[in-house]
Length: 209
Ligand code: URA
Image (cartoon, rainbow, N blue to C red; front, top):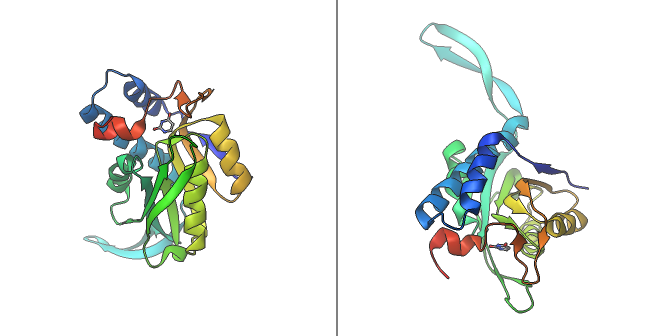
């Protein structure tokens, strides 16, 4: 089964409270969601492999460390995932960005794929799939399937708020994908929203309704 990790660094918890607040407006919501994504990626990349490299400083030659292994790509699940991309790119500016478009049928709550555009070397990259809310797990599972179908072999799912139902669904369908969240919330309500959650992440990020 894939690991599920809550990254509850004090700064992450503090910032998450800011965006949960219904009085937080679009501008601050957008800034702080990206700041949380940045802090999360800082924690998640602790285990990236390093290798030795020779470098010449103004004082002479030395052997130091550089990142090794697969390159990275960040993959937002449209549209709300876009609200975490800039934060990830602050730390990993050379990462490629793929996109997976999913919309949720508001009656059935079932996700539908409408757009997938990935870097050509998707099979050689560690993918950070980002989406603020892991609710039923339907969109995340469809996105992971879409990426696997196109050759992805190494993926982590990074969300701000997870519901227990969503975590279970992804772990059951994709035991090879680790999940990272800033919070594990109580439950889903009858409309498929996470409680207490933060509302509709896409609407809050983009000022729509
Ligand atoms: N998507 C959202 O934006 N919010 C939720 O609470 C659940 C799904």
